[in-house]
Length: 294
Image (tube, rainbow, N blue to C red; front, side, top):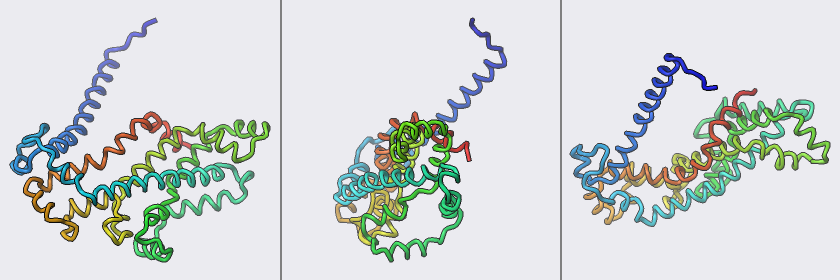
């Protein structure tokens, strides 16, 4: 039987579609403007002629950003940071969240450990104690200075903990009856059933590591150790003259500050854009299911 929709229902749906379309366009237009600026000449951008289509099309801005050995090194540092940091984040998140998702009968000191992690979200020692702690470990100006201080993302632990708690207890009990140990129950049952949450948190970790720039500036003493975002922040945004070559100065006649920043935006987001479509289908489900149960 075909259901008849009322006029008010059709009006409501039409209004929703128009509203969401307007919001999507409002979000898309600035990105198109930035993309057009990145492909335009500096003179056209300075004259305010660029809107949604490039004027004086050229690739000078991308050439300025990409054709430098320092850029290749920083890009490799960021790739290495993601390749090492994300698996470490997810491994520690899973190993912490799974036991904390159990009740006090199964994990005697569960509440004490849970509050230990929650308190780190509520109170912070500040920037100077954070830096001094890392310095005392002897990892300043090393690759691990960007990995180990944030190895345990507590917010992700809370989300995954709640997701594990939403799984029926009968599944875990059935696994124990079949002879499965805790490790087998975790990796063969809990983690596969939590694929939406794991995929969502993996995306969080990828974006966090890829977009991080402040810790690179603070913890790295040499520019060749900078991750990509720190390099772009230093060379393009602030234009640290100690890192500028004569070839760069000649390039500035073709590349303006606005065009180079626009190119920076799209170069930096390309890796995330390549990963996001594969994890997007899990995103909404992982966030909602991991946040509704305390």
